[in-house]
Image 1 (tube, rainbow, N blue to C red):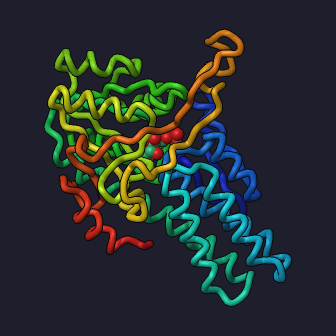
Image 2: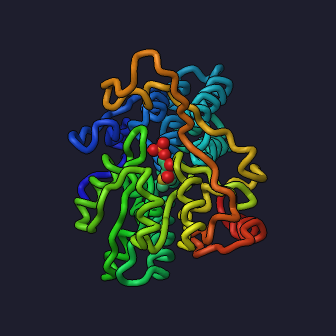
Length: 346
Ligand code: MRU
C-alpha cells in the first residue's frame, strides 16, 4: 500500500481526497484549520478514526495560527474545538480526539508550547490508531474460519483509519494469515463508499469480492451465501447499541433472521460511555441532493424531497460480538465495555 488516508507533511495536513476515488488518487494539502473542517464535512476524509485524527490536526493548525495573538489564544482555541467537534456529530472519535488534543494544550504554560503539544497529541493519536487497528484486526481474524464469506457495508479499511482498518482490517488480516475469504461489499448508497472505496482497497489487496446493491443483502443470506456480517461503528453506546452507516440496522435484523453472526468491529475509542443507549445518539442528517443525485447527475425528478440520515442504530441485542483491540466482547456488553474503557485515554 503506497498511500495513507492522511499524514502530516511537517507543516500541513495532507489527506487523500476520498470524494475523487476510485478514479483519482489526489492528495489535498490543508494548511489551515477551517479547510480541515470543510474536508471532514465534505467526506474528503471520512471514517470515524480518520476524522478523529483529522480533527486533532485541525486543532493543531488552529493553535499554531492563534499563538500569534497570545491574549486571545484560549477563547479562540476553545471556539475552534467546538466547531471541529460539530463538523460531523455521530462519530464520537471526532470529539474524543479533539478533546484529547485540547486537554494536551491546556497543560502548557504558554500558547507556543500549547501549539506544540496539540500537534504532538495528534501524532500520538495516529500512532495509537495504527497499533489499535492491527490488534483489533488480528483478534477478529483469528476467530474466522477458512473459506468464510463475509458481508460488509461502507468502508472500514485503511481509508477510514490510520492503519489496516477495522471490519475490513479483519478481512485483510485473515487473508494475510492464509484464510480464504470472499467479501460481499454493499455498495452503500447514497455516497457509495462500498463500491468506490472498499472495492478500491480490496482490488489492491487481491482479496476476492463482489459488490452488491444494498437491497441484495437479504437475498444473499437467504441463498446461504453469507457466513458472517462484519461492519464498523461510528459510536458504540455504553449498553452496546451501535451507530453506523445507514443500512447497518437492516443488516443486523437480516443476520438475526438468518442465524448469521453479526459482528461490529470498533476500537475502544469509538465506545462512548457518556451515551447510555443508542436513543441518545445524534444521527447526522445530510443534504437531500446526496440521495437525489449520483455524482452530480439527477436520478429523481427535480423538486423531489429526500430524507438522508447518514447513520442508523443497531440495538445491542442484535450484535453477536464487538471486536476491539482488547479482543472480542460478547453480550452483555455494558459491564465488559466499562471495564475495558478504564485502560483507554479519555
Ligand atoms: O459517512 P462515513 O463514510 O464517514 O461513514 C463511515 C462509517 O459508517 C464507518 O463504518 C465507521 O466510521 C467506521 S470506520 C472504521
